Amino acid sequence: MGAAEVLTDPSSLYESNYMGKGDLSDTDMVITVRNTLASVQNGESYRYDELVKTMQATKNSDHEAQLVTALKALSASVAYLDIIHHEKLLCLVFRMSLWDLKPHVIDALVALLISLAVTTGKYLDPCLNMLVRHFLPPDWVVKRLSQHRVMKQKMEVLSRVHEALLKICILFPRAPSRILDMLPNGKTNNVTVLLVVEIFVENLLKLENSLMGQDDGSKIFMMVMERLRDMDLEIDWDYIPQDDSSRGMFDMELEDEVEDNMKEGDELPVGSLTSDGNVVFESLDKLMVLSFDHLESCKLAGRLDQVFEKLFEAFEKFILDIDKIKVSQFLMFYACSLDPENCGVKFASKLMDIFLFSNKPTTRQVSPSLLWMSAMAYLASYLARGKFLLVSYVASILKRLVDECADYCRTCNDDINSDANQIFYSGCQAIMYVLCFRMRSILAVPFFRSELIPLESILMHKLNPLKECLPWVVAEFLKQAKAGGLFVVSDSFIFDKLLESELSGGSKRLDAFFPFDPCLLKSSNSFISRNFIYWSMVRPTYDKDDDDEEDAEIIVNGDEESGEEEEDDVDHVIDKMSITPKHSFMNEMERDRLLKMPSLIRPSISPQSF
Image (cartoon, rainbow, N blue to C red; front, top):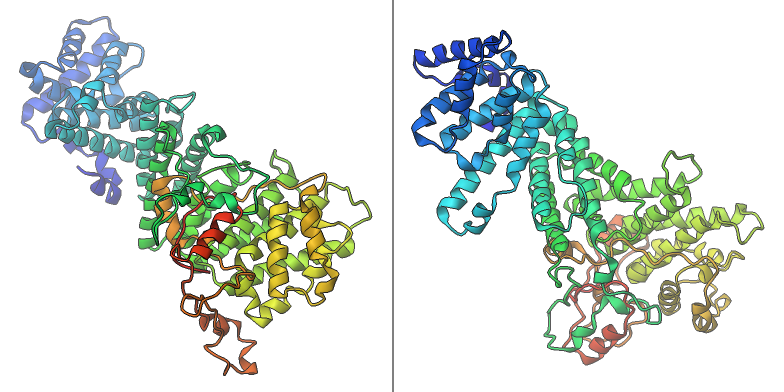
């Protein structure tokens, strides 16, 4: 009986066909085994010893038929087993290896394990342990995987293990949480342990895609996200090229290697974490790809919107407040890219809500201000990098942020050094960071530009956010703001002096953490890059070295015939906006400009322009 049958009729697990449809000798064997098990408690051990010998004959083909019959009979006699009187027999069962058995013997043993696990629950843990143990093939299998016969055997064994776990989890809801506890403890930088984690996560995602996902989907995503986080934290920052604070704003996004052998249209090599052969990097990359594939299947099944709520719950618990997380947060980014209208909007709204309700009490153990500032860092990075987000939606979120910061300026006390101001500074930095990527497209629409008018007074407030925010963000923002004429009374900004003194900074400088900087894992990045805005794709407002044929023009409403009556129809304006490619490494001036750009965000060069 396959997993598909169990999903449609779980009660079939209890049917008598698990004994097999053999002759009467099978029925006789069931009676004999039950009597044998009962006789042990009366001090009679002869027949019990014979049964134990039969169970030991796993590698004796002459006794194979007897072993199968005994296993089937035990499956129908689980209620007669006693953990004390039959300890020797149970130990033999749990020590068996599916790798040593033929397929029909495996089927009989797996049926016994399922019966043991779900009948009373007393044997759940040893049954799950026995199955999970098979996730890691023995050495002789690993060394011979190139042989077709061994590869076939591997598939036969693991498919039965997955099927058995699925059946047990359906019939025993406590099983998924127990499986997680059975993974090896300690560091996950051992190849064998990582293999267990990979197959374990794969199995969990398969369970989530079944009926299990309806009831325990949140729990499963919690397990997956926690495992991704743990592996993510195993990655030492020493393996990752570090930022040089003396360099310009986004210089680190463009690798120095671009000077060598770069061809037009090539992507810059992402700072691949697998370059040193670190097994943690490789395993995490595989798990991220598995998770991406799972989200795609949810999208095709029409249940991504439902899954997203569970995914965000897991993200909020395990990822949001972790400083310097490197890769696992991209699970949220990819889910949003698959469904921008629903998941994409929900993600930004949920992050915004965390920030707006920052005055509400929280039960989390982390500092509340850290949580709120992390939410703002995620929001800024997401709005800046999500190619799938409409400009109109980005502008609407920016308006909410500007309004909140303006309200804070009006109501704040006179204590300029207050820690409470950090939340305000994080909001200001988020606005400036997003505008570094979106300034040209935002200013192209008069309605969007008008909504940013209060920003000038916010940045000139006595709290001095320009001094407290990251200097490379402030520098790029001011440079584009000046070139784009963002401020109505631009003379109030002494741009040049600000730029000269920007590196002095404040006493409580915000962290340089934007979680959706380019993904550093090669395979994972192949899923992300298609919907990701790299700095090389951004056309700043100060980019004036335009050639007629290579220029990337933003045309609102098609041409100058657009009427005033259409200015209020923001969506119509955006629908008419076209963006054509400009950046090319065939253009030496453009190449030099990209090489000099600020760098904390190492991605790839794309021929597309924003």
